[in-house]
Length: 154
Image (cartoon, rainbow, N blue to C red; front, top):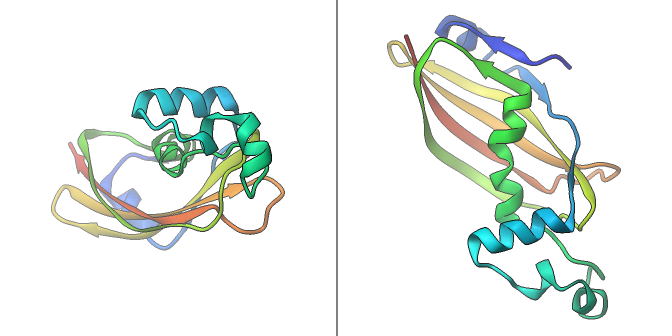
């Protein structure tokens, strides 16, 4: 699916309720997990100790931090949607983001985005984007919820 390009507030409003697209698959490997652990000071063994995880984890391998998955949202959304002619963009809120499954090391992850709603606030668009994170080959999503942005158009 091609990246959706938005040039005006009206363009964004017209997509309300539409599927925006899906990102490419992204490999979540141990190096990425370790770097996230270092950045957040969260070195819980289930994320970083492959030997212990193999014997003591119900998943028998390390898993990505839940917040690592969530932190990939801007990167993956950027593959789906580009909003141009902005003064700035504000992260307004996250709504009902629910973890439904773990992300085992070496999984391929992608995000599917749908514009749930878009509201004209006068040169500002309040956009509620439904985000569903999927693992390649798995039917059950790993994370679902929506993020709300305020797009300030020129």
